Image (cartoon, rainbow, N blue to C red; front, side, top):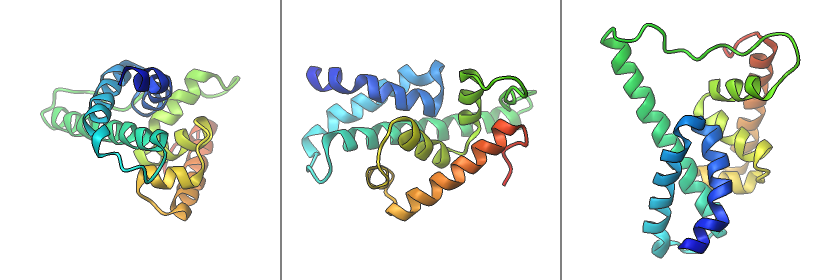
Length: 161
């Protein structure tokens, strides 16, 4: 288990960080590795161990984002929160890492997942389809839509379809 952790913790942290943000990444990585270690006995080998680990990591991230969204909605409905929306991307000037990370953070979770897995982590559409439980064509379509949304966010036009 220690060797598995050492081999994958960097890649898992990278994916999770881009999915949920830096401040919550450690918590989600811990949750992902708990699931990995608990489930290692049920790993069937249908896909590579790396794909399986990515799947559990992405699922942990999506679960966290869902919980956070429900929590924020409860707070908002109780009138305790004045502003939930993230800061809009920086407009004008050179595109920097902060602007890119903010834009990724504004993507819907499915778009965020496919964009991070394909464009940042370098996974194939086949691997992404395995991780997300999609067809290969769905991965391609979602990536196309995610990139279009990113272009709108980065150009300052906003993220609406």
